[in-house]
Length: 355
Image (cartoon, helix red, strand yellow):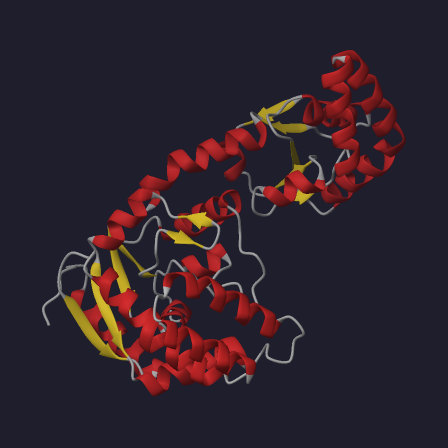
């Protein structure tokens, strides 16, 4: 049986990781690009684990054998189909132990090449956490702007033009605010965030700089690593200046229009306002927010939130950053992206701002 580290796997031309853990384990954290061909269902894994605690290892192993034996032909067939697509399957489980070892052994018995990932998913996680700091480019170009200023759209435009972009909201699957889950789901957990962040940083490792938004440390359910936060604080700061009317219009088009007819939308808005109510001490504004929610006047809700909640919080956070700010008009995101591109060309590797 052949064994490889994750680093060795990353250099394999046609390698594909086969995660044999349960679907729940796979959903909680996996290697990007891996396929899940589980030995146990979630219920079966729980049953074997309980038996291990109550009756010992031998009883658990026997029950595991009873569960897996009828499935083996189907499991091996799925892996063989990957080989038939000119891919090289590499099997892993949580720690590179019994589950991946069993599958690799049966692959050998069936006459197929068997490769196992040393240390399993746990070793992969340690590898990416150790490597991430050295992958972060030397300098960050940080896009700032109040809520609705168009930072994400500008970031996407710059990425489409080939600039080195790290889109943390996309990596977190969350827009980074109380309403950040609207239309996106629950957001990624820390394990998934770390995996996708590592993959994003690998694409940027040879760049002298990268472009990012000025996100908070926590984005949804995930936290940014400290070294990335340091790069952000000490980066080149570009502020997107956008009028209130353009911001309200942009937020309405992004957060309201695509989802307002969904059965869950209004409830999500009310839930968000209740969270904000605990932080916003202005009783009159809270009353107006809930009154407008009753009438489903979402544009007025957006205006009130910008005036009395988000803008004041943003001004407070801006003091965290070191260095001067270069300002770009943001009502037209195409022109803003063009202006930033011009600034990046002028810098030409000399990353310091002169307004």
